[in-house]
Image (cartoon, rainbow, N blue to C red; front, side, top):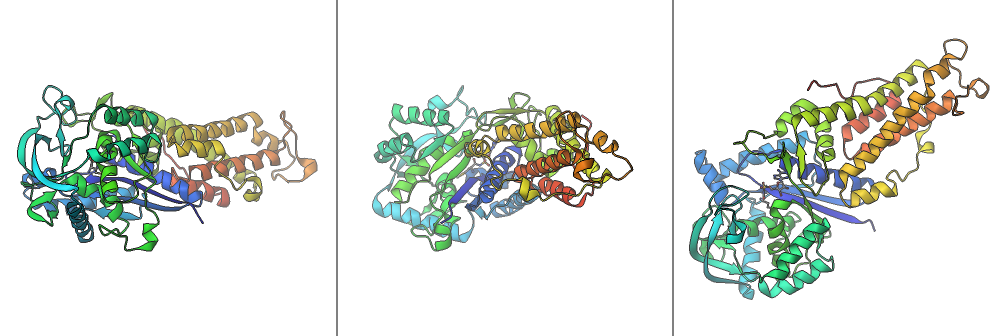
Length: 496
Ligand code: MSP
């Protein structure tokens, strides 16, 4: 039986247009899923939208729209962006779809019947930006550090979900890596949090937010948006709140990776697995946490004016280069600082020059000397991803994997400079180079024209293959040029 692999991105809030941070997570998930496909695993990739809650209702109000109108529009923008970026998801889920809403109600009812959810009162400070209650020590000068706003004081009747009774089990699952949190330092962070305090029961309903899924046992309340959103990771596999309706999809549960940014780690590492335990579902196998993209050393913000737009990147670099630039910008897992200048420099150095030059030189040589391509399969081994690269990818070290591939690009370029294949060929009498053993001239390195070209074409083919998941179209275009000899510029140089 084939290995299966199920990855999710967060379901993004449908209150505003997609930005570069959303693209970062989603491109990473897409690269990983394409690699798993190359490794012949059966894959499932879910992304989608988080469409309920106060934040969305407020935004709709400001725009004089109904919440549904707002989320319909924003969802389309996200879909468009994924199309432009070549994202191959299996499901684009939306929390406003009926099947999902029914499942949420069923799950709520089950938990209520079990006594896991009970009626009480909740008092706290609520940050609408985070859609979370905040404790005093999470605030800086009384404000939410992520949204720079003062959370609202709230005291209302609410339904609560028991947390503490599962705390010990959760700690153990994390320690044993049954619920694996990577990179390691995020696991440590969560364990130290869980070991230092008793988890309080959380409020899972809101009385004053009408834009949400109604609690089946009390229609005056709607479900807390995070409760609603988390379950989309399973309702996207056709789970109905109790059972899977679809064998074909159920086999993908539990998910292998919930890919998330560090901003939403705490909720994902506490509420989410505990919900699954209460629902008697296998807990997701793990979270992979990445850092934030910063611009000029600072959090991107409209007020500072340092936002790098995803549209801006797409317009300047195109989709393939944008995928490359996002994942090569820094270590996945840590905060990564980008500026438009540095992205442009990297584009020119790695893509227009490095890779672009290599392709152009090899194809020119093939054409000038009417060298036809040898049987690639004979030069390539079928395990394209060598062990080192596979290990890097398993730990989502995209930037390191790309660096390794670019070492190959450099070494091929150097090989051309050292062997000067055009000189090797020129030394042969007549215009046309004839490939026969006695005519093959030897170089310093003792290689003949034929061998040099054979090695170069094989190396370029291998590079194209390795790049397939990162830049699928570029990979195809390189292979096509090798096969047809038709030269085409892959990446035009860009002025800074
Ligand atoms: N709706 C919730 C998630 C629910 S999942 C059950 C949410 N949505 S969000 O639209 O705010 O998206 C947050 C995610 O976007 C982050 O976890 C991260 O994946 C991505 N990013 C948002 N800003 C980012 C950066 N500046 N840099 C990198 N990624 C960040 O939270």
